Image 1 (cartoon, helix red, strand yellow):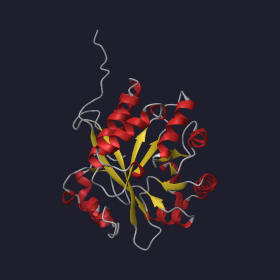
Image 2: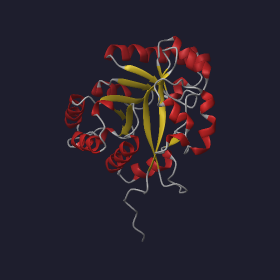
Image 3: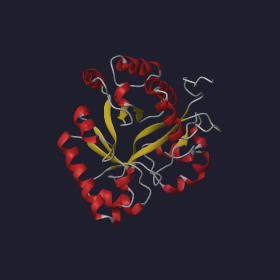
Image 4: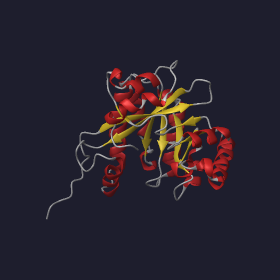
Length: 269
């Protein structure tokens, strides 16, 4: 009988996707989200099969730490906020020490970091979870809740985390311009975010009409193919005209810069 492999697939890759602020006359980069891809050319290259494999083997914490190390190594030279993803169960005693060590290793100010909490696995030790969040915030790290509006315990995650950012799931964003029901849900999330003093980010924005409709109800931060696909990190930014342009604070975000880079991207998030 063949024993199941219980190690992380290697090598892991990092792609980055911009989060942009379109509330000003010239849209500006707010942050980049670092996304992980598995070994290229394998069945685990895409995000969904990779993380299904990780969850099936209980490797979430090991994977999160490996992804963060790789992400910070790749994003160290980017002059903006850096967002990385973790499972709730990863945010336990010892995590803040790990993150601060990695930040110092790559000369990244912790105040430039955003920890995005997903809902794939529940948190089993809420006291340790709260201690970890407190420690992270003491060093300026911001907390975001991913996929707000979708998931089995979203309100609980918001109450437990009191996040600085709430990311509206793409299910509600896509087609919102022509769907009053979706807009009612989005407006309710905006009210909830206002109560917590959190900033809302709309994920999965692919159409200009949705972007304009969401701007109309007060959302300022957007992420999605309309503004840029996840792109493979390169030390030479001139290889990716869109990334090079978007990371210059005085340069506009413009869709025409995206097309030359699409073939360089990994599978989209």
